[in-house]
Length: 243
Ligand SMILES: [Zn+2]
Ligand SMILES: [Zn+2]
Image (cartoon, rainbow, N blue to C red):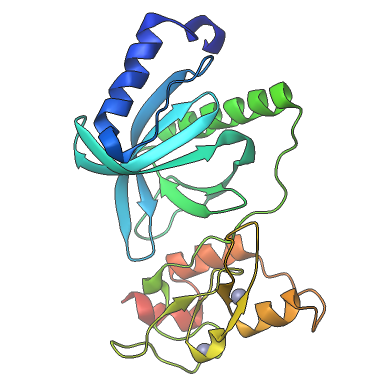
């Protein structure tokens, strides 16, 4: 399919159409050998709430953006090299079905499709592209992934001290290492994580102590599990936040 479409007129036209929809807000996407395999709308779980995003699957990259005008205008383009991508299926929550995690070393986030079939197709196609990319470049699947951010609404209490209540005046922050929602006092430290940013980033106390070598590895908390609990609302102390 990929080899069959590469360097065809129809493929070039499709890629040009995507570039056109992003306009000046997007990067040039045409590249020799690059093939656009499919597109569709997925719901992306963002910090505040879940939002529809347009996704384009190429043989080597995944591109997504905000929808300004359906099939006409998109912005906020993000490009993820498929070599870095690992997927993980997430169980459904009371609000969202057909979810999975898209994980990379820089950023990880949850998306959901409209049906189980759509999810199966997206995951199947993405994984096939990742496999092909890795075998073409001799790369390995990436082992380290950025923690997905626990959504704001999943908790109204700091997930580290479990005391501070969030309000209009007491802001929520996110630890860039573990993705937890924490208060200002619990995230006073900054730590340089070159994989994520050239600047030191906000981290929570336990992550800071672990990163700076002041203590051994944190008891590994299965963050995927936490995300399920937090979003699913089954964690006892998070329940009230979801009402
Ligand atoms: Zn706190
Ligand atoms: Zn942390």
